[in-house]
Length: 142
Image 1 (cartoon, rainbow, N blue to C red):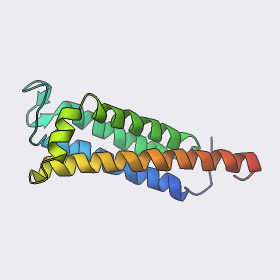
Image 2: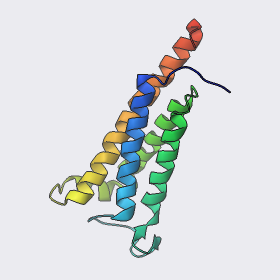
Image 3: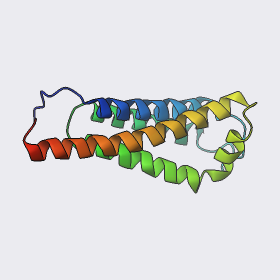
Image 4: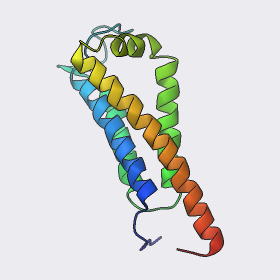
């Protein structure tokens, strides 16, 4: 499957959102910051907290897949970002609400802000890039 078409602006914006989300998760993997954690002391390797670290790496890998210019990859990025946002609103709501209501705790506030803003950008831009791809394909553009 070859794609010679340039990467659309919406696909680039999807990548930006996913990279911001990934950086936020990597930061949480290196320094989880303050706030309640369901698991204390488990799932760590040295100073690294594995769950957010692995999520950050997967998010960056999906951003790389969007950069391959395969038409439906922005939809994959949007779906992944949506699942992360749903997870933050459900399973992670205690930690997220604590960190976002305590901006004086800069590390946790910055990590969660980056994650949430990146997720929303990736969702909106990924859906829009997919719609743009489908419309262009229907019209006959590359």
